[in-house]
Image 1 (cartoon, rainbow, N blue to C red):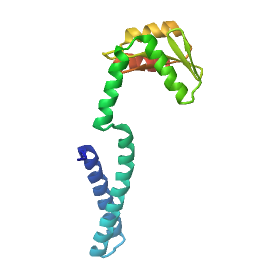
Image 2 (image 1 turned 90 degrees about the vertical axis):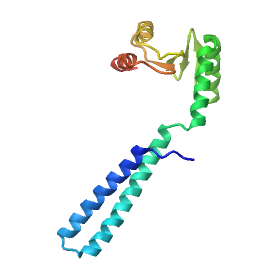
Image 3 (image 1 turned 45 degrees about the horizontal axis):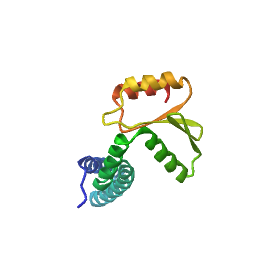
Length: 163
């Protein structure tokens, strides 16, 4: 059974109601008879609701994972957190090469399409301390961090350095 998200239903009702009242007001301003105005306003509200539904459903479907996908993701992240760093690098290298990206090993990182990629899979979110070490190591050279999650401080730090 599909889960109905309250936020999406509330958005649909809000935009439909706005379209209804706006179109009803405009139609009545131009002295269209009331029954015809109501009918047109309902049709416009339904069309607006359908349009908003299509926009929201497409964007939210991309953003949210279903239960099976979430469980698979969590299992993979747990595996990567428990695996030895050398094995993680080799597995990521194989995945990038299978995806037809230009990738190669470089010390404790990967060079993917000319950008350093550092895997930091841990059980807890990666903190600002680990990010500071990476910033010192790579300097102004651009790099990508692969991890389970970041702390808010680490996100702010990475954003301030444009990583």
